[in-house]
Image 1 (tube, rainbow, N blue to C red):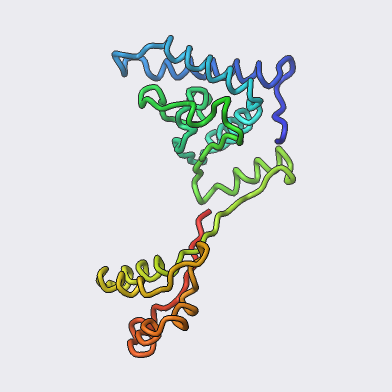
Image 2: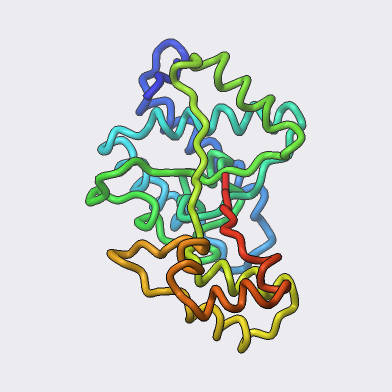
Length: 228
């Protein structure tokens, strides 16, 4: 993981302590008068617990990096989402303004995001304005080096039965009819569903529908969805 450069006189652990505690006090100023049940000590206790876990697991630098580029984006007028996913359960993230959702108000659990039993990296889900997100990527690349920055995307292919039902819905074909056609697709073998063209070749009833009804012929395709 790239190294966040802390000011002189600090290491990663001591610096995250300072900015998180200061950040929490600023949050207190925002909450004053908004909640009759507001208990600052409960937040301080939770923050101390979370910081101990973060430091013990060696993730102070990770929190600081995320804090850094979100702070930069906000300072440059780039809209940033309030936070979602398990990271919204962290008081430390809230104090650092990585997220804007008060996890104690909403009874969210820090352990869903990070706990000593977790063997994988924590993962903040951060949303930036789509028109200016490239500026944030460029900032991170310039600061931490292009070898330390990468973009990922997830691609998955729908199974044939699901494809038929989805396309039928778009084409306003009644669900009962679409379901009947979908069930003609041969059962998956070792978890792999046959492509639609292969299913048509193997199942005479599907081939008959394809050959004799233009409605089915125009919709027989195997689309691929992607989500970044």
